Image (cartoon, rainbow, N blue to C red; front, side):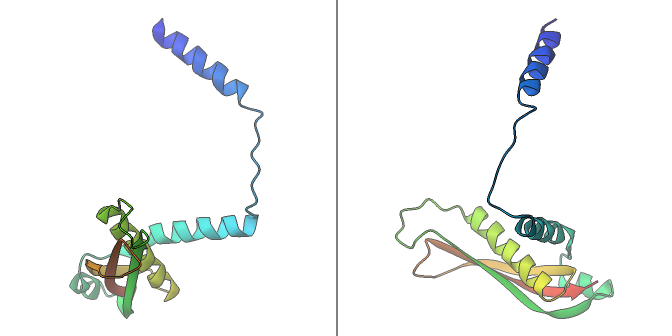
Length: 130
């Protein structure tokens, strides 16, 4: 009975919101570009080593890098290394896509010293056509 009441309550709530519309200043071109970039990044093949890429027959396109810079350099921000590393990897993937790659490796990620950042992480790798 409790499950039935929960379902009825959820349906009533959802039906009350069915006529809502949202407005934004983002046009369709910007939105489609952002979605396309997100999808393309997700479609990139990641090799776990350059040797694995070579053995699979992938063609090396060149060295790629992504560097994140988080915070303002004043030490006032609580910046997570994992978040900075994730941002650097996203930038590395974007670099791979600019080179026309559909695969990549991450060779290293490490903190770098940048005066205007609380935390800066640089990731380097290789771009491949697979």
